[in-house]
Amino acid sequence: MRILYFAWLRAKIGLAEERVELPAGVADVAGLLRWLQGRGPAFASALQDLSVVRVAVNQEYVKPSHPIRAGDEVALFPPVTGG
Amino acid sequence: MIRVQREDFDIGAEIGGLTGGNRGIGGVASFVGLVRDMAGGDAIGAMTLEHYPGMTEKKLAEIEAEAGRRWTLDGSLIIHRYGRLKPGDRIVLVVTASAHREAALASCAFLIDWLKTEAPFWKLEETPAGGKWVAAHAEDDAAAKRWDAGPNDPPLRAGEGRVGVASANEATGRRD
Image (cartoon, rainbow over all chains, first blue to last red; front, side):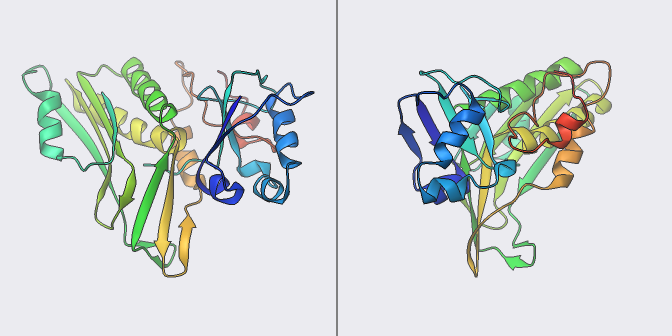
């Protein structure tokens, strides 16, 4: 699974992209976020307030209940501010 | 047509390219977004636009296709820049062309409103106090939502990426 981080999430976590094995027991976006929050202080801090975190799976906005599969491209980012 | 690019664009040339040769076009509407020199009381020295390559193009193409379903257009164009920009620089260009002005004006407003809440871009402003990520504005969500009602309720998904708390969009029972 590929995980991408953008904007201040990338800056806080200190990573733009990583490849991880789908963790055991993680079946959906909510589960993945919980797992990420437990990966250390940088992740915990960046993902403290999930109301300002948006998630895309395979480049589509998804809800927390969206399933996660091993080959997915998952992106975490703040609400968008283009235009 | 959509383009995501670092380079600047020539508004006249872009409009000419979109409309050239089509004598059925009666109206062209355009929106140009520029970098301001002030934001929330902070002087802005420069701004860096980050985006999600791949998803950006996908969302812009979806938004443009949706405008084409809602209005009879003879052409449309979205150009969005990324990278470091200075105050006064052009950020975004939206152009729509139609036989009549109503369709051109309305679809142009629709495209920029939806782009602001759907396309994965983020702005980092350089202020005297350091870099500052621009926060999303509630009024942008409201501007996008005004296009949401109606018989042709579109498959747009502005609120779906939000997790954790119930978003305003979810609370309205939006149909997908």
